[in-house]
Length: 488
Image (cartoon, rainbow, N blue to C red; front, side):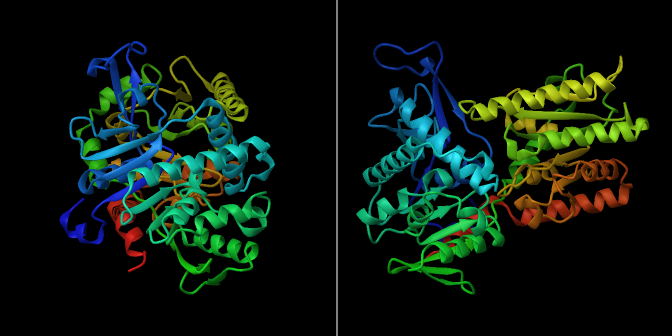
């Protein structure tokens, strides 16, 4: 965080999120007595909001309130609080322990079987078990209690994402004069979709306890205001200013796209040993460095559009036999939410379909699709971006999608092309991508074909425009804009 932006930021900040920036795990199981350093290992979260906010917290200090997701988290904490980062200790991490019942209901349940499909406009996947809402309410209350315990009345509190829609109202009731912000990182649905939510009024009431509610795009912010208008007759909405008046107070509803740490990614990509990255990630599946690599990187979530992408590859290789053997598609996938059966089945379907395509097209010296779930360091991932000739980022819908930012940033050799879903928030922010409808299998195949065959001048021009777009959305600017939007 540079000094030029320091004056716009709060002196101390409280961040509240489901995900924590650092977690502790046992090396060889729980120990009796005092915990020593070599009894635990520390894992730093990468990507997304943690990468954007950890540098701010290091520079400004304060407290980060989060779910204690690591097995050794509470053992190393004093009253649930541990100083972080390890060895630097520039801010506090307040951990909220959750029971298995709470995790199942609040996280696997309401957050990811009600709110996630609702906001991605896939209401057929919603499942509203009564215990889900009960646990969501209870856990939001626990987060609000933790905020009250660790904060002073004048500290700014910034809630993150869809896991914590209710907590702001509870904090507001306890501290009427507090300054509260919220950022909703996933899409916000249209009013005709939001009306499917069985607790719409409560969710909006919780969010409107904040002084500022942020979204990645103007479309999402406008949808939120329209949902307020349709759901809460006592609220007044000024679409021109973006301000909602509710319960006697204004809430500024703003579009504020999240970016990435541009300088950090470029430095790591430049330093990467690309030959070593190829060997580590791809092994013998893509031994020839002259064979182009097309890359997909995402969690195994049904919103990411992986099956359509594989079908598009199948379509392209079937239609263009001359392209067989000329490039390899690499799918870097991360398992997620495996406590939900839908996600376990989705992974099985993805792996099965990749195997089918490989069985159809593979030769003795070429594997069409290389699949890996290996956990990669940020250095290795940025090196993999640099290796890739084309990135396929084709989610059905996304709040932003930071892979679309990270990939062109890491293309430090001046070569690379991005095929991007027009339904990702990034598509409204980035210039230079080849955009596609993520459900159009033939269209994805056509865009990939074009990306592989771009002439040098167009490829370079598109990449430069992408890099300029990403640089303008650096994560530092996201933080500054959020606080600039708040009350004076």
